[in-house]
Length: 233
Image (spheres, rainbow, N blue to C red):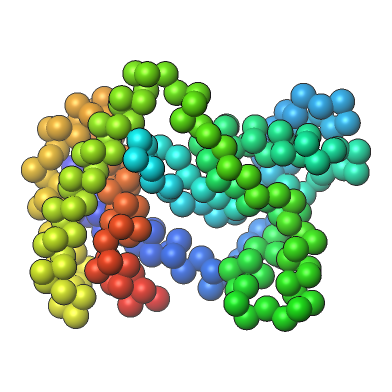
Protein backbone atom coordinates (compact mmCIF):
# COMPACT_ATOMS: atom_id res chain seq x y z
CA UNK A 1 0.00 0.00 0.00
CA UNK A 2 1.20 3.52 -0.82
CA UNK A 3 0.71 5.26 2.53
CA UNK A 4 1.94 8.58 1.14
CA UNK A 5 -0.66 8.51 -1.66
CA UNK A 6 -3.41 7.54 0.77
CA UNK A 7 -2.62 10.46 3.07
CA UNK A 8 -2.78 12.86 0.13
CA UNK A 9 -6.17 11.53 -0.97
CA UNK A 10 -7.59 11.58 2.56
CA UNK A 11 -6.31 15.11 3.23
CA UNK A 12 -7.79 16.29 -0.06
CA UNK A 13 -11.15 14.80 0.94
CA UNK A 14 -11.03 16.44 4.36
CA UNK A 15 -10.14 19.83 2.93
CA UNK A 16 -13.17 19.50 0.66
CA UNK A 17 -15.28 18.83 3.75
CA UNK A 18 -13.87 21.90 5.49
CA UNK A 19 -14.91 23.98 2.48
CA UNK A 20 -18.42 22.50 2.63
CA UNK A 21 -20.05 25.73 3.79
CA UNK A 22 -18.87 27.45 0.61
CA UNK A 23 -20.61 24.90 -1.60
CA UNK A 24 -24.11 24.75 -0.20
CA UNK A 25 -25.64 25.49 -3.60
CA UNK A 26 -24.71 21.92 -4.59
CA UNK A 27 -26.97 20.36 -1.97
CA UNK A 28 -29.37 17.82 -3.43
CA UNK A 29 -32.69 17.44 -1.61
CA UNK A 30 -34.19 15.17 -4.25
CA UNK A 31 -31.82 12.22 -4.28
CA UNK A 32 -29.91 10.07 -1.82
CA UNK A 33 -32.52 9.82 0.93
CA UNK A 34 -32.76 6.67 3.02
CA UNK A 35 -35.79 5.30 4.82
CA UNK A 36 -35.78 4.12 8.41
CA UNK A 37 -38.57 2.34 10.27
CA UNK A 38 -39.98 4.36 13.18
CA UNK A 39 -42.16 1.73 14.92
CA UNK A 40 -44.78 4.48 15.30
CA UNK A 41 -48.47 4.19 14.49
CA UNK A 42 -48.61 7.76 13.18
CA UNK A 43 -45.84 7.23 10.60
CA UNK A 44 -44.25 3.87 9.88
CA UNK A 45 -41.07 5.26 8.30
CA UNK A 46 -39.31 8.56 7.56
CA UNK A 47 -36.89 9.60 4.83
CA UNK A 48 -33.61 11.18 5.89
CA UNK A 49 -30.31 12.25 4.42
CA UNK A 50 -27.02 12.96 6.20
CA UNK A 51 -25.92 16.26 4.70
CA UNK A 52 -22.75 16.74 6.70
CA UNK A 53 -20.83 14.81 9.34
CA UNK A 54 -17.50 14.92 11.06
CA UNK A 55 -15.75 12.65 13.52
CA UNK A 56 -16.32 13.43 17.17
CA UNK A 57 -13.50 12.45 19.48
CA UNK A 58 -13.99 11.56 23.13
CA UNK A 59 -11.65 10.19 25.76
CA UNK A 60 -12.96 6.70 25.00
CA UNK A 61 -13.58 6.51 21.27
CA UNK A 62 -13.04 7.73 17.71
CA UNK A 63 -15.94 5.71 16.38
CA UNK A 64 -18.66 8.34 16.59
CA UNK A 65 -19.58 11.43 14.57
CA UNK A 66 -21.72 14.52 14.81
CA UNK A 67 -23.90 15.33 11.86
CA UNK A 68 -26.50 17.49 10.19
CA UNK A 69 -29.44 15.66 8.67
CA UNK A 70 -32.57 16.50 6.71
CA UNK A 71 -35.86 14.68 7.33
CA UNK A 72 -38.19 15.75 4.55
CA UNK A 73 -41.41 13.83 5.14
CA UNK A 74 -42.49 14.20 8.77
CA UNK A 75 -46.26 14.29 9.08
CA UNK A 76 -48.27 16.46 11.46
CA UNK A 77 -49.37 13.53 13.62
CA UNK A 78 -45.93 12.74 15.02
CA UNK A 79 -45.49 14.05 18.53
CA UNK A 80 -42.27 15.87 19.62
CA UNK A 81 -41.20 12.92 21.80
CA UNK A 82 -41.67 10.55 18.86
CA UNK A 83 -39.62 12.83 16.61
CA UNK A 84 -36.73 12.71 19.10
CA UNK A 85 -37.01 8.91 19.26
CA UNK A 86 -36.92 8.72 15.46
CA UNK A 87 -33.87 10.96 15.20
CA UNK A 88 -32.18 8.84 17.86
CA UNK A 89 -32.79 5.73 15.74
CA UNK A 90 -31.10 7.47 12.81
CA UNK A 91 -28.19 8.35 15.09
CA UNK A 92 -27.73 4.80 16.37
CA UNK A 93 -27.86 3.40 12.84
CA UNK A 94 -25.19 5.83 11.59
CA UNK A 95 -22.98 6.18 14.70
CA UNK A 96 -24.04 9.81 15.10
CA UNK A 97 -23.83 10.86 18.72
CA UNK A 98 -24.75 14.51 18.08
CA UNK A 99 -27.43 15.44 15.52
CA UNK A 100 -28.91 18.65 14.18
CA UNK A 101 -32.02 17.91 12.11
CA UNK A 102 -33.74 20.22 9.61
CA UNK A 103 -36.84 19.85 7.44
CA UNK A 104 -35.17 20.82 4.15
CA UNK A 105 -31.79 21.55 2.59
CA UNK A 106 -32.39 25.27 2.21
CA UNK A 107 -31.63 25.85 5.86
CA UNK A 108 -28.24 24.11 5.72
CA UNK A 109 -26.71 27.04 3.85
CA UNK A 110 -28.17 29.44 6.42
CA UNK A 111 -26.83 27.31 9.27
CA UNK A 112 -23.25 27.65 8.02
CA UNK A 113 -23.62 31.43 7.63
CA UNK A 114 -25.30 32.27 10.93
CA UNK A 115 -23.07 35.26 11.68
CA UNK A 116 -24.22 36.93 8.44
CA UNK A 117 -27.97 36.30 8.64
CA UNK A 118 -30.72 38.88 8.74
CA UNK A 119 -33.53 38.65 11.31
CA UNK A 120 -35.82 37.14 8.69
CA UNK A 121 -33.26 34.49 7.79
CA UNK A 122 -32.67 33.65 11.44
CA UNK A 123 -36.39 33.12 11.89
CA UNK A 124 -36.51 30.88 8.83
CA UNK A 125 -33.62 28.84 10.21
CA UNK A 126 -35.25 28.53 13.61
CA UNK A 127 -38.60 27.48 12.14
CA UNK A 128 -36.99 24.84 9.95
CA UNK A 129 -34.99 23.29 12.79
CA UNK A 130 -36.55 20.03 13.94
CA UNK A 131 -34.27 19.26 16.88
CA UNK A 132 -30.72 19.09 18.23
CA UNK A 133 -30.02 15.97 20.24
CA UNK A 134 -27.14 14.13 21.92
CA UNK A 135 -27.05 10.33 21.98
CA UNK A 136 -24.85 8.37 24.37
CA UNK A 137 -23.78 5.58 22.03
CA UNK A 138 -21.05 4.56 24.44
CA UNK A 139 -23.68 2.85 26.62
CA UNK A 140 -24.53 0.44 23.82
CA UNK A 141 -20.98 -0.94 23.63
CA UNK A 142 -19.81 -4.10 25.33
CA UNK A 143 -16.78 -4.02 27.63
CA UNK A 144 -14.71 -5.65 24.87
CA UNK A 145 -15.80 -3.02 22.32
CA UNK A 146 -14.98 -0.20 24.74
CA UNK A 147 -11.47 -1.57 25.25
CA UNK A 148 -10.99 -1.86 21.49
CA UNK A 149 -12.16 1.72 20.96
CA UNK A 150 -9.82 2.91 23.72
CA UNK A 151 -6.84 1.16 22.09
CA UNK A 152 -7.61 2.89 18.81
CA UNK A 153 -7.88 6.23 20.51
CA UNK A 154 -4.58 5.82 22.36
CA UNK A 155 -2.81 4.79 19.14
CA UNK A 156 -4.16 7.67 17.08
CA UNK A 157 -3.49 10.19 19.83
CA UNK A 158 0.15 9.03 20.07
CA UNK A 159 0.79 9.24 16.32
CA UNK A 160 -1.06 12.55 16.09
CA UNK A 161 0.99 14.08 18.89
CA UNK A 162 4.28 12.96 17.35
CA UNK A 163 3.25 14.14 13.87
CA UNK A 164 1.96 17.48 15.17
CA UNK A 165 5.24 18.19 16.96
CA UNK A 166 7.21 17.62 13.75
CA UNK A 167 4.76 19.70 11.67
CA UNK A 168 4.89 22.51 14.22
CA UNK A 169 8.68 22.53 14.11
CA UNK A 170 8.51 22.97 10.34
CA UNK A 171 5.94 25.78 10.64
CA UNK A 172 2.89 26.75 8.60
CA UNK A 173 4.89 29.00 6.28
CA UNK A 174 7.10 26.14 5.11
CA UNK A 175 4.45 23.43 5.18
CA UNK A 176 3.37 22.03 1.81
CA UNK A 177 1.26 19.07 0.79
CA UNK A 178 4.46 17.18 -0.03
CA UNK A 179 6.17 17.88 3.30
CA UNK A 180 2.92 17.15 5.15
CA UNK A 181 2.67 13.77 3.45
CA UNK A 182 6.31 12.97 4.17
CA UNK A 183 6.07 13.77 7.89
CA UNK A 184 2.75 12.05 8.55
CA UNK A 185 3.48 8.99 6.40
CA UNK A 186 6.95 8.61 7.95
CA UNK A 187 5.51 8.77 11.46
CA UNK A 188 2.59 6.46 10.63
CA UNK A 189 4.82 3.83 9.02
CA UNK A 190 6.52 3.17 12.38
CA UNK A 191 3.16 2.08 13.81
CA UNK A 192 1.98 -0.04 10.85
CA UNK A 193 2.27 -3.41 12.62
CA UNK A 194 0.57 -2.13 15.77
CA UNK A 195 -2.17 -0.56 13.64
CA UNK A 196 -3.13 -3.93 12.17
CA UNK A 197 -3.36 -5.49 15.67
CA UNK A 198 -5.42 -2.63 17.11
CA UNK A 199 -7.88 -2.40 14.20
CA UNK A 200 -8.11 -6.18 13.83
CA UNK A 201 -8.28 -5.94 10.03
CA UNK A 202 -6.03 -6.85 7.13
CA UNK A 203 -2.95 -4.66 6.75
CA UNK A 204 -4.39 -2.62 3.88
CA UNK A 205 -7.80 -2.16 5.51
CA UNK A 206 -6.34 -1.25 8.90
CA UNK A 207 -3.92 1.31 7.44
CA UNK A 208 -6.67 2.91 5.36
CA UNK A 209 -9.05 3.21 8.34
CA UNK A 210 -6.23 4.36 10.64
CA UNK A 211 -5.15 7.12 8.25
CA UNK A 212 -8.71 8.45 7.98
CA UNK A 213 -9.01 8.53 11.77
CA UNK A 214 -5.58 10.09 12.14
CA UNK A 215 -6.20 12.79 9.54
CA UNK A 216 -9.54 13.71 11.08
CA UNK A 217 -7.92 13.93 14.50
CA UNK A 218 -4.98 16.01 13.24
CA UNK A 219 -7.33 18.46 11.56
CA UNK A 220 -9.26 18.93 14.80
CA UNK A 221 -6.43 18.73 17.33
CA UNK A 222 -3.25 20.17 15.74
CA UNK A 223 -3.19 23.95 15.29
CA UNK A 224 -0.61 23.97 12.48
CA UNK A 225 -2.79 21.54 10.51
CA UNK A 226 -5.86 23.71 11.12
CA UNK A 227 -3.94 26.73 9.79
CA UNK A 228 -2.65 24.74 6.83
CA UNK A 229 -6.19 23.60 6.00
CA UNK A 230 -7.50 27.16 6.08
CA UNK A 231 -4.71 28.28 3.77
CA UNK A 232 -5.86 25.73 1.18
CA UNK A 233 -9.32 27.32 0.88
